[in-house]
Length: 264
Ligand code: GLU
Image 1 (cartoon, rainbow, N blue to C red):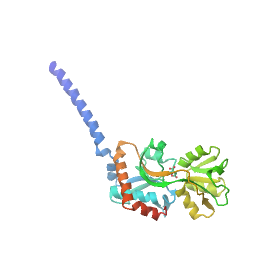
Image 2: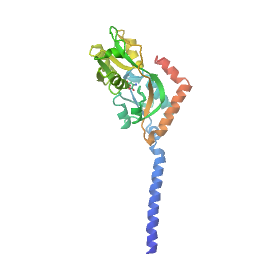
Image 3: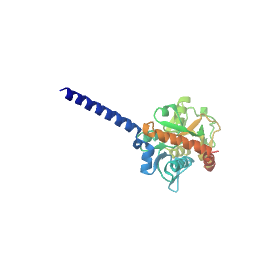
Image 4: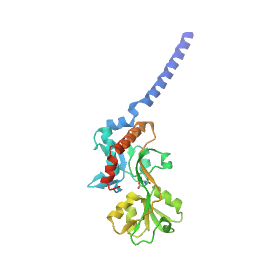
């Protein structure tokens, strides 16, 4: 009887040790590590813009741009081949969702670090600084954001500019668009008096279309960073990404990419 009792106790203890050990093992397991998953898969899945010159857009059927080049730099480091990237189109309104439902490994998409976003995803170090600006037709009387009172203003759904303008100027009639293409078409058709978003993004329209101009004032400081999931599996990837950003600063890549994409 006594033997049986001890046998049961020892069996229970063994099961507990096994379960704890298994859990610890699982937590430390490289199998769960996203870098390992990416290496086994043979490519990294990156959420990028497809309508945002010069950061992420399509040219001759290919993803190109400043953010796309950053993705290739990271792929070169992790997979030793800058072409081992699968690009997935993201917009300001779906990029956090697509990251968290694991449709993409990371997001490199003109995304500003904000406290609200930081509560949902993790951010790398910043790799670029932009500022909120206003794009208007050349003949417009609008000189500053304040002149947009009671007017229709276009924003990208889910962008920092949408939140800012709603806060700063509650009387503005804010119209949300999913893509820059849609917002720009609305401006050209006279349905909105202005578009407000990052200067670096809006400038590309002013550079190619002499009928629109960028107002000189900047209303915010937008620190762009790479979005990574907050889960344990993504931790080592975040570390690698931060090392890559430091390397891009130190080896001059970031400076030459800014020059390449005329972002200076
Ligand atoms: N940087 C801004 C943001 O994160 C611009 C939006 C965009 O990506 O187009 O909201």
